[in-house]
Length: 315
Length: 286
Image (cartoon, rainbow over all chains, first blue to last red; front, side, top):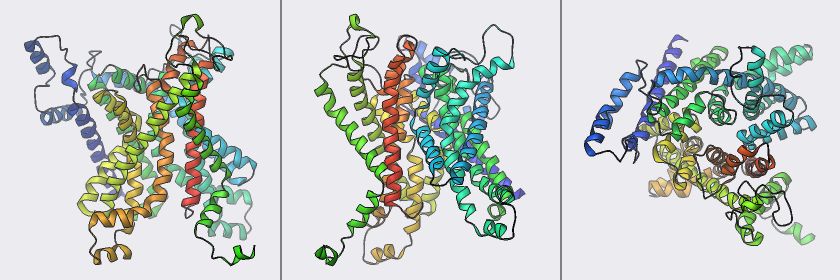
């Protein structure tokens, strides 16, 4: 197991390194990349000076090595538009995204697994069809549009929940207030994440239900409830665990748009602001952080997976 | 009847029967055809301009002249839906082609040649799978700007990696197959073996993924344009219409409803068609 962990850890580091290279070179080799951000109205000498200040006069390979050696020490450069260290901006925003993302992930997993159980239990009967129709809608409805619709319904018409923000400005911290702000964005994000989880839960349950050991468990006279919980469900959860890595990437992509709809001051909003303002250090840092999250989640999933399924770590 | 029974059953009929068992898939295909006809012929037949502003008639309700009313500048909403749909569908289909081509090329080469090529190409694919698609799209848009062609390529880059994985799996499966050995023995070149002998095996799965890819591309373009980073004015797309509409949620909420309904319907149709095609073309995994 230790050897497996070390091997996976190394792979994760390599992927992270490659992500940094891909994003850095994409941005720096583009025509009109960072160097064009320097105003064209200035004189040649002024441009030289600014290029030098940001180190843009050096060859791109040198810049990458410089940037990387700083990045591993936690220095991701300075935002071009806000003048603040990128690392500090990321730290400010990461909390809000984690709050939103973890809530949505929890809701999506809970709902997805429950609906998956219902669908598998009533295979090819109406509850199954209802669940699969819901999943199809969840895949097809744009998250940001659903966000707008629930704002119209719950904030504009009913007036139950706030339209945007992480908390009410100028009020004292209260858990109820936070939850009221969280409800709509987390709900919408969870709805778009759920279809993946429903589908995997359903097919995993159906597969396990038809396996030999479940039939044996029934044959030796165990209560159906015991078979379902101890034999079927436990094993069916393994594939669900396995797609959490994929779900995390979808979650990050979704949160970018949802954070914009609901004015949620998280990493996604930061990425949009950076893209709009051509803030190269920030977009680089935010993408690297998102990639790191995905790599870490995949690593954890793989380790859990290997812990519950011995075939993986010896394979 | 007798001669029908006597005639050797053509191979095609099995496929036809399998298709007939998927009425929902057929309905989805019909919806797609209707949408395509609508956005190509609609603007000519409907007769209202999507761009003529008329401040006197801004935010009008639906009526005989403006079927879905007008927006904040008095432009006809239905005409804008038709024009925007043209852009959204075009971007969706072209992005799919970009992802399909790149994914097939990379997946095919790595699966067929194996070794170092495989190692290098598939690790690249891993990297692209690890970057959340939307962040990758934002990085490219930040670096290369948002010319429509850039948007199309960028969205296509969002799903090529998945395509490459599937094609790679198929190509490496057939790399040492007997029929491939036979083509080598007969003196076929590598490109010939790849395109004429192995590629056809991948077609069913590629069609399925490509159909689902159209839906994904339309959603991504809509999100980008909604954020103001995708298709730029004066061109309208369903996504950019939503961006304008959000400012009028209180006055005219329906402005925000129509474009979204069309996005959802289109994506639903492509996804449903993709899943039905999977059942029809690839009955191995159910």
